[in-house]
Amino acid sequence: MSPKPPANAGTAESRAMLVCAFGAFFVMGVAGAMATTLVPLVPSLFDVGLTAAMTVQWIALVVSGGASLLLARQLQWSGPRSMMLGGLCVVAGGCALVGMAISPPLPFALLVAALAVVALGITALQVVANLCAVSAGPAATSAARLAAAQAFNSLGVLAGVCLGATLALGSGRLGAGIAYAITGIVTAAVIAVALFVPRASWQYSAQDDPGTPLGEALRSPGAWIGAVTIALYVGAEGTIGSLLIPYLHQPSIMNLDLASAGQYVAWGYWGSALIGRAAGYVVLKRLPPTAVLATVATLAFAGSLGAIVGSGPLPGWALISIGFCNALMFPVIFALTLDHADAPPAAISGLLSTAVAGGAVMSMTAGYFADRVGIAFAFAVPACAYVAIIGFALWIAGRSRWLPHDSRITSSVGSRSDLTS
Image (cartoon, rainbow, N blue to C red; front, side, top):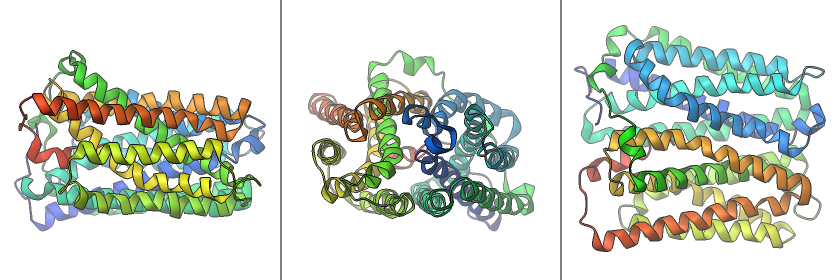
């Protein structure tokens, strides 16, 4: 059930709300990406292995999966303005806590707790910012608004990784604290903008969209298959992004210092994802989504496999290029699941949003292998995930040959598929 546009859609007031949504997407990207750059720094600061260090990456997935449905219900009561301001304040406060917790001899668990606070704020923003982007104008242009919002998110990820790589990996504990302080200041600036947006601009009422019981999706095998596939994708993307810096740091690969490796990951892995989103908009209008998904998943599998068996700079570049392939996976998996699962779209969307928490299992597993058999072999974990994603694409393609096409959400899958990416 698509949210209803506000009465002031297309006016200066609705555009002001859209600006706030863009700012929230940028904050989500910056704050979320910062944690990835902490993975190679944590072992030296807290004397823990990569298994424990990967916690700073997967804790966000657990928080998002556990809190998204509760926050969606809260939005029904508080409204978009309060949810937006509350989420931004929680992110800013969490950044301050991370800046304090990054300093030993404070326990590592305190850092994880602080990052969980940041993740909670990001989850709240994710719930409300997508809603604001969709409802800040007519439904016919909602896909364009969401595409623009996702571009701000990708830009924020790129900025966050660059910031973390330059400060945290370049200057250690002090640099990490400064990086999170800068993130907090950026978040405070968005809060100031949101406070000055007139209350009349926030006219969408979540009470107009009661949603659909999640139980209907839980009874759909197709929805479950899509949820598992989403979890595998999220886990694969986060695992590679977190392990790529120490992998490129190895003398047998590129022998880069941590700060330089972080820049490669920022501009190569995450930057290519930004390009992939733009290219995907054009490609998916001309080619079947199942074929696109199977192709990019196959390329990602080949890149992961190369990291396991290869040496020198080539496997490093292969892993970096996976960022481009990953850019198309979430929206295609999301849209195909909505189109083929036997359940209402709103219920499926809730299940898929919760499923991202499953990616935490992959991050923990990869960290376990990295500690015991080496970083290279840890990429077997995302490689297996990409094989499963290929299987999902082939399964959907097979169903499409004999099932009648369900057009109930075809006109909006592009916008819906971006709602939680």
